[in-house]
Amino acid sequence: MNKFWENKTLSSMSDKEWELLCDGCGKCCLHKLEDEDDGKIYYTGVACQLLDVESCRCSHYAERLSLEPTCVKLTPDDVDNLQWLPGSCSYRRVQDGRGLPQWHHLICGDREEVHRGGHSIMGRCVSERHVHPDDLVEHIVQWVD
Ligand code: SF4
Ligand code: SF4
Image (cartoon, rainbow, N blue to C red):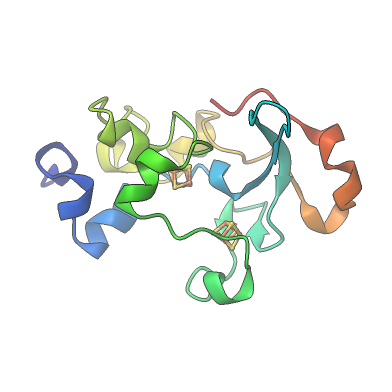
């Protein structure tokens, strides 16, 4: 395996390499709330309506940006600028020079390990289809790292 993430900057990766770098944790698909007073971001355990909460994958990945206005297409610049991107996100780890964890599929060869090891949102989120927007604050979680 060519360990491209060790030799390339995020901005020099090909589209295929960029997509491979995502660990599939799903954390960025959770709704977040921002405190109006201090700007602090709080994650909720409520997932985007397009997330298949069973498989932890986007149900319409190719068309996600046109179907879901709140979906953000990550770019290398975003990794520095998006305050809400989790510290555990593989893009942020590589950008910060922390490398990839042992459970990442590019290291262990198994895309399910992120879920087995409890590093994803699988089994601990609910679809926004089942939550009223006014109730989001009741779903704030502390486990997004
Ligand atoms: S938080 Fe990062 S690694 Fe996890 S699903 Fe989102 S983009 Fe991929
Ligand atoms: S549209 Fe798909 S990728 Fe975008 S936030 Fe929703 S589930 Fe995640």
